[in-house]
Length: 140
Image 1 (cartoon, rainbow, N blue to C red):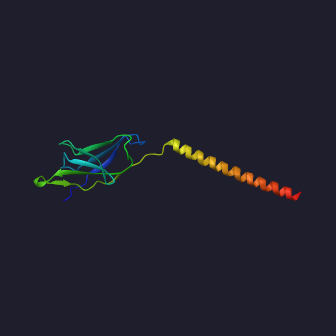
Image 2 (cartoon, rainbow, N blue to C red):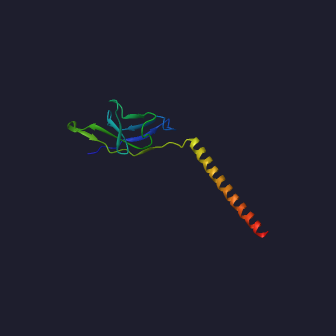
Image 3 (cartoon, helix red, strand yellow):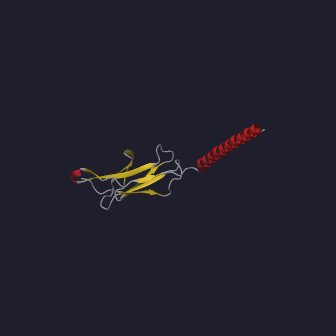
């Protein structure tokens, strides 16, 4: 039997690049202190943490350069129930981690687009000029 899902949130400071650490906090409902928490990215287990015996929450620290830092994360906790049988919670709601596009990439793509546009305009101008020159030569 599933027990209530934990809450999950992205803890500040929020990452601004893939090298920045990601902090994700998971909290069990009242009545479940000292739970064992599992953090998932999609369906893959990322990290396991146990809350202190008198605490309901843990904070997962995914350090910079982590292989698949962005994406959708869920957490789940487990406790020992009646007759010391393990019980697992439902999965938390998802939390989404994404990174802004670095400004140098934006500037580079805009300058490349500008260069291509300029090259296209120059090509069109040269073609029009050649057509006009040919028409003038035919008139002579």
